[in-house]
Length: 386
Image (tube, rainbow, N blue to C red; front, side, top):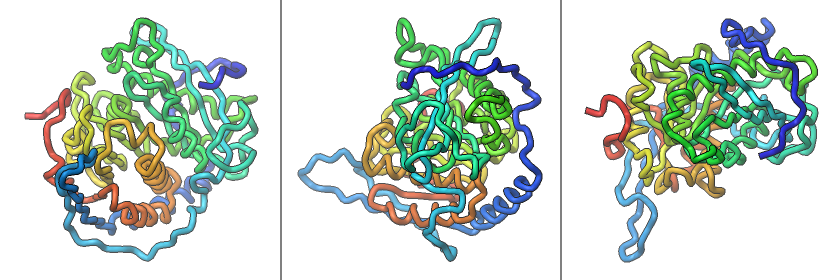
């Protein structure tokens, strides 16, 4: 993890100031773009038939069942060009670090947070100097906040984090107290119940930091376009922020859940408030930590717009932490998802469709009402499992 940089002026939290409005003209433009994206997504019915070959006599780490999606496919006229507001690798990546602190139940919680942004320099997905100058000509940029998995360092996801920043996003990855590998005495999963509050504070802080003079982030965050994403327990947190009645954070425009689950200790109820935040659910078929039934429960309970990306043979961590075809697929599909719902790119919706079709050897894709029954099953620790 990069060392801490200079500290900036103190943060004065204001919960009523979570999402300050952008310039009126930009908001009108975004509304028009989102309307176009919504129309495109409503008419897409994607169905990809995936057959998993079985090699007799040869052990395989891939799924042993045959998975099928058999609905009608309707394609829209599309373009494969990069969306107007940038694509993966369009920008260099700069970063600043902040120690976000706040009080919860009478105790101070500290959230060391690295904040990435599109910066001047050679375009790509590598770091530039700490505090390097941002590219202001294309700002403000949507904000994505990432939540780490249990006992996994937030910076272990560096490839994903840099990918999103290089595509034109502000990306924050807080280190949550008590569940990071560096926790004295070892991580404690019981602290997970506090993480939705931690996530809220990070979003509050970033919203305030957008107006702090003297920081590279001053004026470049689009606080009206906020997305959340998380892996494993971090996926539980991101899901709670958009779907759990006790933890919903108003104003979040999109959520990507990477091998996550509904988490009973949060309390509240899921998908009971009429919330319909666009949702991308990603799941490996060989995940034995949060098995496919967890993602099936999430997806089938959510209202549209929603998308399911199944990665054939993938484990709980490999698509997010290990380089290769699985991780590249996650990078591409999450970026296109956020392009659609945070940037309002109609081409993002169309490219999402094309990319799903081009990855049939390792994945399957749906945006229908429910996912195949072959993926349904129990989800340990989740509510309403019967």
